[in-house]
Image (tube, rainbow over all chains, first blue to last red; front, side, top):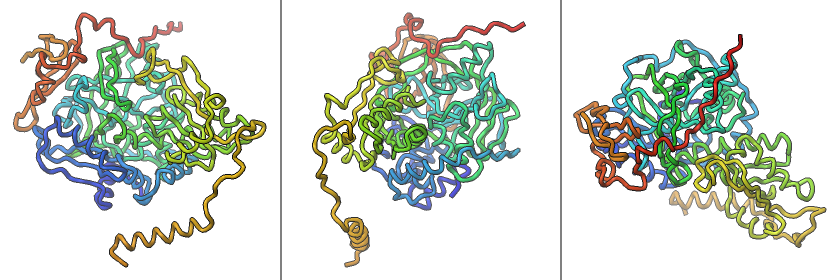
Length: 477
Length: 79
């Protein structure tokens, strides 16, 4: 199933019993943050929430936790909501190979129904503080679109990404461009040219774009063309008559403006996905010039904090899959990549081995992938027979295959994103590789010649018992 | 309408907005440290004396806070 907008996906979630309407009156603070935290604690099938009555905001609607569970994530992909994480990983990995799928260009979009240059974000958006000590109200599930100022006609270099946005005034935002991310490169080029950087901000998009926007694509890969690959049909965009940027057709709200050349203002702190508040820094600002929005727009946010929260589900597999394909290009033996934990600060990779020491080579290559240079602080290598998404199996491999004297490599003073609370100084960390694969010739160590194998007939019995259990739950004897 | 910033104690904070419906709250912003808050939030957020001291800001030290990313030099103009 293809979802062209957030509303279509919310309808599907409702049909599947994965959407909860909150019609009782709620306070922006502390209720929204508390509900955002609480809903992800309901487990791997937690529902999306749609608030209808926020104090002071009348009938404005706020959506939370839209892709905050593996069940909702599976529905986003058109899979059964019971699909396992590993099944979802391989579904994305397979669709990834369809890239690039050229976009579908149309002239009109629903967000063009309302256009204003008199922007008042406090009236337009039902804002709520995400964590108590945040420096302000944030847009934390909005994608920022920008182009390379030196190559503005190159659609591949147009970037669609998540960058936290602090609401500083009615028409002014703070922007956090992490140096490893594409928008930081766009901004540097604009400032070298002495120019402002035009941007568009899309709030409340279809879930596939929301997912792809978090993926560490290569610099010249288009998020829209990747969204088309994952959705199985061209992604629909509308060219802005103000900036020339391609805008997602189904967005609830579009904000247009410019990153102001040379301007830096205090930004933060913000309770981040690391489970810590970020530091306070002087960062770029966006001056907004125009807002476009659908009738009765739905504002979308996500709760961010100590994992697990919506952001971990949202960015998890789109982080895993590009690393997988980048490794697979050189090492076809790689089976799967689990970079779900804290955006891949800890990454687990399963691989077959060509010869002794091979897994360590794959691990070192991981550190130099586009995502690895800013994340992948801990890389754990496991055999192809170990499911990297099954932590019980991973811990078994570490317990029985890992020798600290011979299977551990540390890399001092490596690059890391500044948000890592252990970075010292910010941006620098020690990285570690833990090789928990079975030693292979000529690396002859230990005795792994008599493994306990799965008893014959186990697969058949898994099906038999699953069927009996389903009948038992249905009340049949 | 002016106010004291709970985070940096500046007296330059001002009202940025009132609730679009029913005037349930007001939002204030500080032009010194860019903190914003809603009048309906708990005292631990709105009261300068009760704001968590670990998150307070001394306006005199703002210039020492890191700039990220740094502002690059301009490219030479080609003639």
